[in-house]
Length: 422
Image (tube, rainbow, N blue to C red; front, side, top):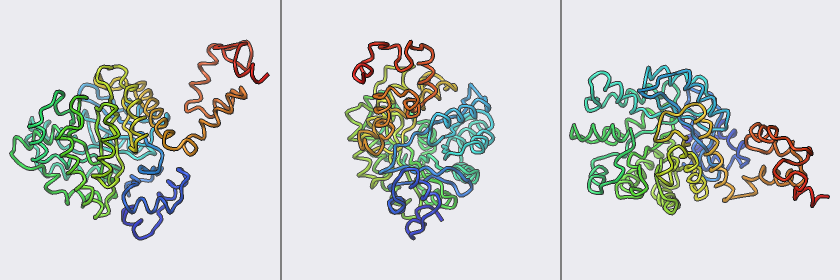
């Protein structure tokens, strides 16, 4: 039984109860929303994890990716990065390794994480075929389905599946033309295979086989956005919208089978197009949770793309996106290190929270309101308690201690709040 199947029968699962308690909403609201697909709870039947709800009416969630590259294979560091992401408030992880023993690193992350863990199965299927035969074009259709099933058995809670790349989508892309090209790794694997073999995408053509596997393990489908733009000038083009039309149809079919789905969204997009993209996605996909990748709202700030994406995340959360994938300072430059991961999670959490506050300050801003009172009373202990990262805040003040304990060195004796209070 999947969460959707249980919800449709009126069965309130332990995971639904946990989400209701964490989000301070009614269990009835969660039950109804899971049944109609507007909230998902990624939780593989083979894992026991902290339930996390993603969808309308809930706090915007943050995902952190970890994983090796072909140049840097250090399993211990990837596990460390996953722990850093958890410690700094990530809600979910995605294990996206492309170097080394892919089964080993995935299982290590699954074993250590109390959070939902996602993956992109086509990475492993393609890479193992490349290692064996020299090119992704030699990948066999069965490679894809075997990999999906293996990762589902391992306990992966949500999977990015590239089902929406089909012949028509590729035609739209070719006719459109792009400045930034195709930047989805999974999309490039599938597209290359299709063009070389002159075949339809097996994940699209045999979508029911995908549903058979994920239904058995209650894996949430993250409907991959293979046609997302990799440059601002390419955003919201015909290829992207064509893929979104296909995604909406696939979401319908998944829900009919009782399979949970989220829909992935753009990666590079100007701020003025964010609301439009969210509205179109919600309409096309019948309010399925929307998973925005970043997004990047200017292309010329490498080394500071975590700040760029925090701006995008705030806009996305404000207009109704439900799940944000973090971006680190290393984006477009290198494999992120541990400190990059920390900064990426922090920046995206701040952006997502800012967007939530724009929706409902009273509900999502309890700590913000409490912080205002603590600052007015110059109560530094309470200020730290309500800070998102208390130790960091305290460390800055302690490094430059004031003469008076109730002020800071910014204003010292001329603190406006102290003057007014006196």
